[in-house]
Image (cartoon, rainbow, N blue to C red; front, side):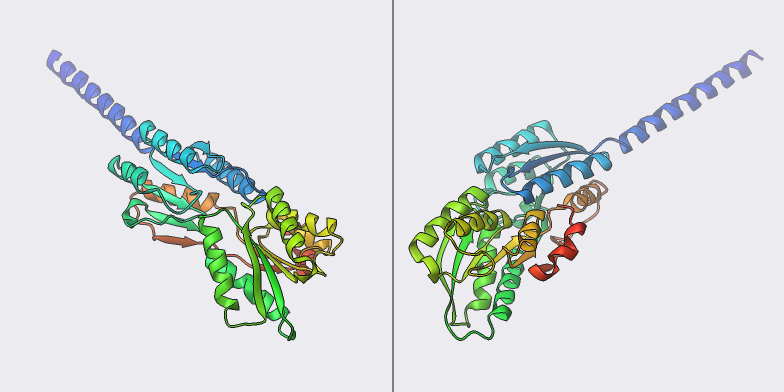
Length: 323
């Protein structure tokens, strides 16, 4: 009798231990994912919307997001990535300020066995195994789309069409690629000529300042402005108006991003077309992070789908814009 009681007690204890261990196993499985994300800064409407998308999606997906603002400085991003490595986060993601100079810190992340995801902008590294995937737009294609719109718009003109270009941050992937794509399309169109090209650093204030310099140098000889983002274009519009010219009429204005501010400018007749570059990368990023942690293999390139919005469609499309 006593023996059976002992056996029963042992069985109960073993069952209890099994339940405890099972619970521990479940807890391990349900361990919250920690994502370290280094954002470039808050230089534009686009970037603000991008950050918001990442923050909101991380919260909705139950991912612990450690967000660092680099204030548009590469050294700040490198410090942030090293901090994430020290904190032993599960995944590191970042939007690189510029393309080059990342190999040492990315090698440190690889040695720490922390996977790295690139968002919005690419890096130029000799070893592509230092990062898992790149999520974002095709910047070269955006430049091509901007140029194709201009080619179609000016197809009946035989006189020279003089262009000034507001480039993005020097050395950044979108600045390099948007210029490359644009020039690829216009290279065999001799009437389309870029008179001047200078960085406006993707900001409204700098866009205005550089456009003022363009107007001072070229005056009414400028027929087209190609801006690498909407914020620079909006700054340039102010400069054009202050010079006594009509933006959208005296000077055709082409920009990239398709933020709400661009649609407002188009509805006011001051901007002719914007090429979409969606900042809403949060859902794609969190999906990729979860897939990584589940042991899935990600494609090396994940491209976002985007459109082109001319002035004529602005009023119809504006209510649908989320950024």
